[in-house]
Image (cartoon, rainbow, N blue to C red; front, side, top):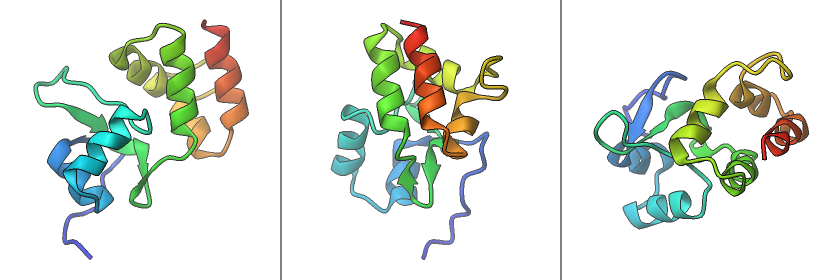
Length: 115
């Protein structure tokens, strides 16, 4: 077990942080991003992924389908992240909070309505 503390919801994890948090080699981390299990941004300099997208050392399982729905609707990676982290009136919370609570269907319904 690593001495690195778990990421807090506001943390952003760089690629080296992801390697450590996921316990996966760099190639596998890059594949998770390429296959849309995770989405990240370079808006703050280095490429990073919101730490809240990692749960128990794995990408949040319900995240991938939501990322795909939003990408298919024409959202950029930055727009996907912003949408997931912003309060949504219909959901009554942020989409990522709804996903973390197991409300995948509701989140995807709202995401599809954006297309």
